[in-house]
Length: 234
Image (cartoon, rainbow, N blue to C red):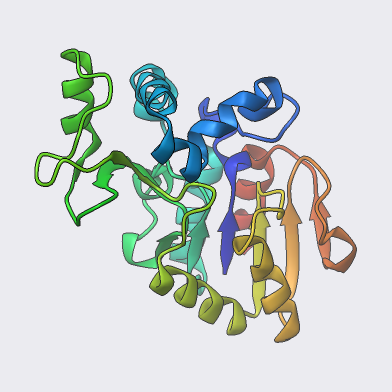
């Protein structure tokens, strides 16, 4: 089983959130746009969020890097059961990983959803309305608040996604935690589930994590270098 976080996408030009150059490290106030209570209650936060989406060229133009491609190769070479990603960029799919093996535990930015009804659409549908002058577009079906199809702080995960992730952790022989600080729950608890069922744990992350002392191996190298090298050895 593989769990990936923001660190695997930084080499594709998408900044992480909590690293030394992270979005929230440099601008703590920006975290409000990813917190559900602020997003739902404050129109100004929503307006800023839509402008952020318009200006987030990294998300829309990013290409998979060698780390993403290595995990797609790993799937073809070994018994990769499930790839759980905390990322919302869909670069794993673009790199060739099978969509049916991927759990987007925090959703994705490429879709927009209504917070009141079940309406969903490609994100570009909403972004066109913002470019045309709507600062805070409403749901075309019910008039509800629109948001990217990501899981914000304070928002429940999709129950089936969490259940599927925990099941994969329970049945894994090897658990790879890649580019994740392992501090955002419940995804951060998956290594503990895997260890509790006898799996070996390998951590690849630039900064220390709470699970480093429990891991069978900890690697700090650039993921675009170490992942292809690891997969080549299989």
